[in-house]
Length: 362
Image 1 (cartoon, rainbow, N blue to C red):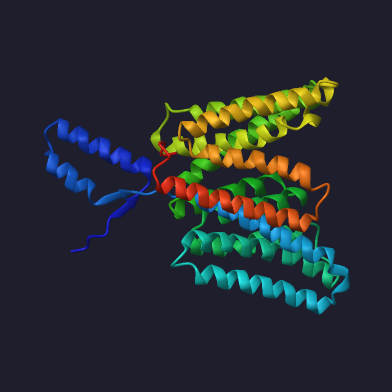
Image 2 (cartoon, rainbow, N blue to C red):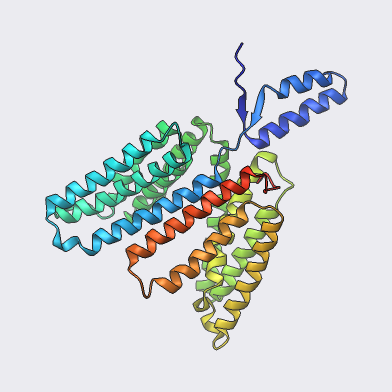
């Protein structure tokens, strides 16, 4: 008899559990039947917070390596540059495949690094051999090339990246609006085909945030609304999305996740004194005041066991790290160290999660 449990998302598992308990209360199913039914399933999160952190770490390390090569680029021959790109691409691909079974999270972050190196390689090869492409055609090549990888691995991150790259090409190439709508429809169908209901909700939520951004930017242009008010509005919007609960269970995690991303971006901008340039000479004091308030909020979330607080704390640490070090240190070294810091955060988070420190499913 097959004893392997079927994996469900946490929201679907909770929904199934509540329905079975409802049937038990109606005396349609016994307690043992409910328990035996639940034993056939296990809650499984489709998104790994650790993988996100390790993926960003791999990107930062990759940027560090690329900037180091770029600083010595002029001294290398064209073919040596080309071979160097192929070597890095082959190494990251091989490392991803080699660690797929034993270290799946590391393997997936290496896959993202491969995608990044491939995209950077397109631009580098164009420069090496003086190839002439249509404007931003590199984005189209990159987006189309990684689409099969997204489908084979059923990876939402690469699928979204592919969509954004092709979307950027169509926008800069001045394509008609129907082409953008068609692209959105194609990718929406792919999300559905790959059983990414969360991906569909992600797109819907992201579309809402982008619409709000467009509206606020319009206010900035037409009504000359100050930038700090725009970022503050987004920060409040993020808080609302994070605390939003009274909606369908399967959409809660997605909307909360978008809220965290909105808080992450707007929070960083609100800690930068240049955001408050219209409020000089008090701009630095206001930025520090918000940073203090933001830090207290993140510590409160951390104490409550909110997993996303670790990502936000890490983003603030890296924000000040980049601000202090980019002026004095080599950029390649800065990116590599930042990647190592982020990787350390990833392992720390995983250790905390396994020890049961996190009290929140999200």
